[in-house]
Structure formats: C-alpha cells, structure tokens
Length: 420
Ligand code: ADE
Image (cartoon, rainbow, N blue to C red; front, side, top):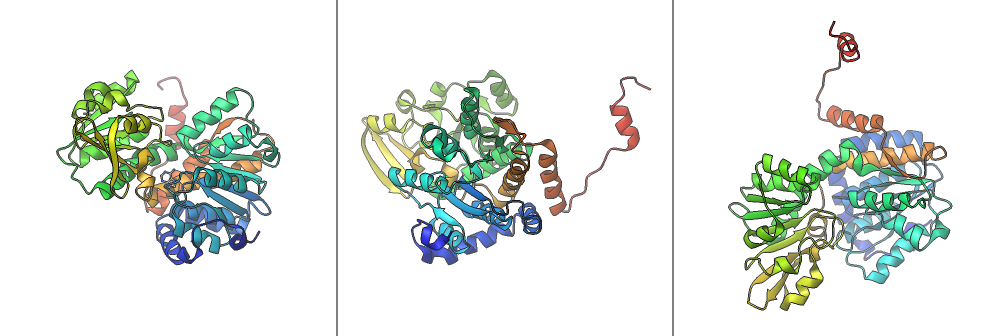
C-alpha cells in the first residue's frame, strides 16, 4: 500500500519536525532498539498486516516502525483527539506507514479513521482503551475474520475486553499488556506520575509547592501522581472508594477523605479512577475560586464536564488547553485539556525510558500472539512471565546494571519444606 497516497493526515510537510521527535526518543529506548535489531533479522511479521490504535506521538511512532521492521505492513490511527501530533503522523507516512489521524478530528473523522485502519483487514491489532475491539464487535464484525489476535495497552481497555469476553463473544485472543509487571509498575506509576505533572505545569505555569492537590483514585497511576505531588511540595489528599487502597494511601503519608470534604480544600484536582463522574455538580458547588481540574484516566468522563458546563454562567478559553467556567457566585473553575488525558492532551505522554518497556512488551507480546494464536483461548490473556522478565533484564542490561542469581544451594533451600 502506498502510504503517501492512502493516508489522511494534516500536512505532509511537517515530517521533518516529526522525524526529529522520533529520533530523539529512539536514543532513549534501548530495549526497543534491541528488539528492532532482532526483528530486522528474524522478520516475525513478514507478509502480515498490523493495525494500531495508540496515542500518536513520537514513542508510538517508533513502536510502529519497529513492527514495520519486523516485516509488517503497518496502518495506524490515534486513540484520543488531543494526543495525535500532526508532525509525527507526517514523519510516519514518509517512512512507509499508512496513517489515518490528525489533531482534533471531528467525531465523524475519528470514526472514519478507525474504520479505514481496520478495513485494511489486519492479521494483528494493537489497541488502546478497547476502541478497535469495541468497534469490531459492535459495528463491523465483517472485519473480524482475518484477525489472529492483538494486544491491549490500558487498564480501561482490559476492563472492556474482559466484559466482552465474559459474554463469550470476544472473537480472538487479546494479550493484556497493561497487566504485565513491566507495564503497570513503571508506566502507570512512574510514567503517569511524571507526565501528568508535566502536562499540568506546562499548561498552567503555576506553582505546586504549598498547594493542596487532590488525587482521586489510588491505583498504580494515582500512587504515582500522589508521590510526585509530594515531591513538588504539595499537601496531598487522596480520595478512594476501596478501603484497602485508602489505608495504603494513609500509610504512604497522604490525607484520606471523602470527595465531598476534599472538594472544599483542593487547589488541583486530578482524576485517575477509570470511572464515570467522580467529580460532579455536588463537588463543583463547593470548590474554591481558581481550582484547577484535570483527568489522567483514559476517557473524558471522570470530570463531569456536562454538569460543569450546565452550572457555568459563562465559559472561555483563558490559555491554550485551559477553559475557565464561571459559576453563578463568581467562582472560576479551570478545566485542563477538555477533561481528556492531561498528560497526552497537554504534553507528550510518558517519558521515553518508560515507554521503552511498555512498547517492548507490545512488540514482543504481539510476536507471541502471532506465534501461538492457533492454540490461544479467545480471551484476555496475561503476558507470559518470561516475556515480562526478559524486558526487565534488557532494561537493566541497557543501564549497565548487574544483578545476582540464586546459587544451587539457595534454589534447593527455597524448594525444600524441612529446615535442614
Ligand atoms: N505515549 C503513547 N502511548 C501512551 C500511553 N498510553 N500513556 C502515556 N504515554 C503514551
């Protein structure tokens, strides 16, 4: 397929800048570089078509090129209207990858892009947030038959894929990259922890030290966001619905309270729950003038933007990616990046060193699905531990770190049930 003729992007002349961004991240993705070298030799995807739906920024572009280096014909679309970078899309097209994506597409364009990406009849898919899987099963089951299987990036996607699998209707195996240790322990915690603050700080140019930061949800992402808020000198409040996570947050040194109480004192609110309407009209009524609201969950449903707009007497853009909602009593609430993922809508996503591991898992996970798809269950499956461990080992190796191994006596000791 001719990528230049087929792609739909904003502007091919932006390619040089996009390629510079890709070259920069490449230098910081040693694990993926090693995998690319192996793929070039072994050609695991030779003759196959791979369709990808991911946040279309430089690290993702490099993953697409690594899959292409493995012999695949790659087509890609974005997974969020604000996270697609037009210059990166242009660079990808120039490198022979077909792209259907642009920054801020209309709803109709978004649908068209997903449709076109899947109408290539892929053998394998990489999905983020379950967009491909949902579209294929709900709207275009005619495009399912060629698909051997795929890999899913996020918690949200895995929840949706599992819900579908529970009805017995998932038509191919999906490997749960998010649940691998090398993904959620690092990407969700250290990646989200840093990139969310990158997005907030770039966008607002405000001080965090001495402010009250409310982190809504204490999963792996919430833990990271709270930890980095503390490092920036904020007073950190955590809200939770899970009693066990709430105690953990308290023992990690954070104040834990209900959203009702937190809404009165927060300067920054960050949602990381994966759930719907966790900040809503009840909370907007109680917030301080100037409060900043943003989301780092996959979908833009965590801050109830409809209720916020309904409460406002006026709204205006006060800075790029900041919308000010003025309440009847004059208080102004500021929403970042339309309530979409602030780290990707208002910044470049996770650091390259973090995505190195996540995308290594995507590349090798996809290779695994392709090798074993005939015997794999049509279900949501874990990344095999050996793949996970190998990614960690490659990461250590690339940092020049050596670790110890168990001696034979230690192995024997660990495997015996007596004390001798
Ligand atoms: N860059 C590309 N995909 C990403 C993701 N899922 N999270 C953060 N940064 C990313």
